[in-house]
Image (cartoon, rainbow, N blue to C red; front, side, top):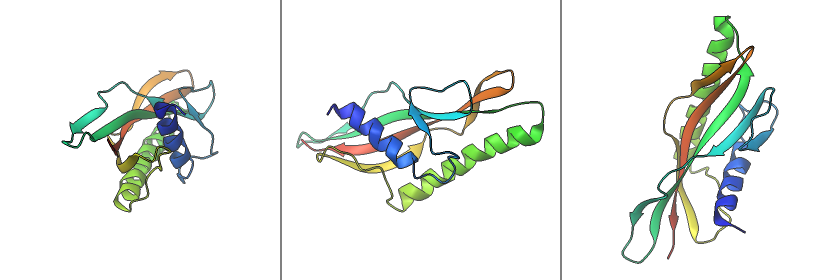
Length: 143
């Protein structure tokens, strides 16, 4: 199994446990034309720190994106923003409680999962908008 695909699959499996995702459908690198969620890998330098024994502290950055109903009604847009605030709090609590994605590679050990920014409106068209929040998974890679 390719290391990157197992990390993104572990992240997807983890997010399927999130109580805020309405229908449990989470895509990878694909956001459809209707309300949906996607986990999109982001480019980054994966190595945070190198250890003397050859091991490394690494990161995997990704964005959680969603397509949501969008209009001039402030209540709808506040609800969309509230979803991302709740998601951010859920990630913080999960990380604090040690409830983290389990990686398939036995030489990789998850340390934390965290948000890099607040959720924000990324794109809007007609009555649907794309929102996103950027996150990262931090893990150790044994030599």
